[in-house]
Length: 309
Image (tube, rainbow, N blue to C red; front, side, top):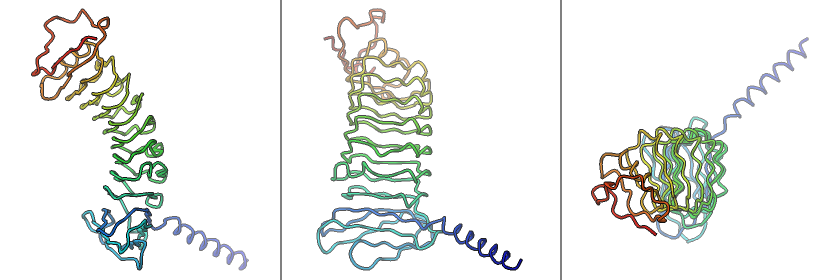
């Protein structure tokens, strides 16, 4: 009987120890290129909790989280590529915000920081350096900013169902899968190589900036909360806005839109400063002759020119 009780206590203690180990200390690692000038990035760590940062040369430094965003800086003695590791000292220290702008990041691993709500790693000089970024553990992520990184593919964001803000503009993306990101409110995907864009599941979208792509079709019928739509410099020949009653700004110049669509957009938004319908190149046979000849075409009404091919 005593032996059974002893074994039970051993199993219980082992279970408790295992339970404590399930909550690991936060860790973020990255590799970046550095010269002999000061390098810096920004992080938000739990106020009053300590963490260490190993810059990849010499002894780690100990830092303490504050209520404000911390700027961490280092100057390397020799130019090169360095591996940097940021490790929480205890499980009570959580990393929630990471900002790396123009840091020449070669690789980034945030799988050990599940509390992150904001990741901004942009303006890098290493094309496709973040394509393999694994975000499957970052289910708390609400904003992801990866613009100006030369990406030909976006990291898989299907696990990031809390994502509200996605900036992936000015890359080289040819496709974008947003089907799982139903909480998305702000999407910047302009300046890419997109031929199609499906936002039918993103019904919470408020701002959609998809200009400077190769879009031939854009269906925003499901985006009833949409307030700002910037779809200029594409190949659109139709744009229906019947269900977008919340729309406040519309920039759709340099497409191939029908006059009827332009007129509908003009009527939907009263303030001229909030619309730019601009120059459209139309085949003569596509002109809708049912549109009143009094269609506003002055610059003040944002119809600067209609070109007929």
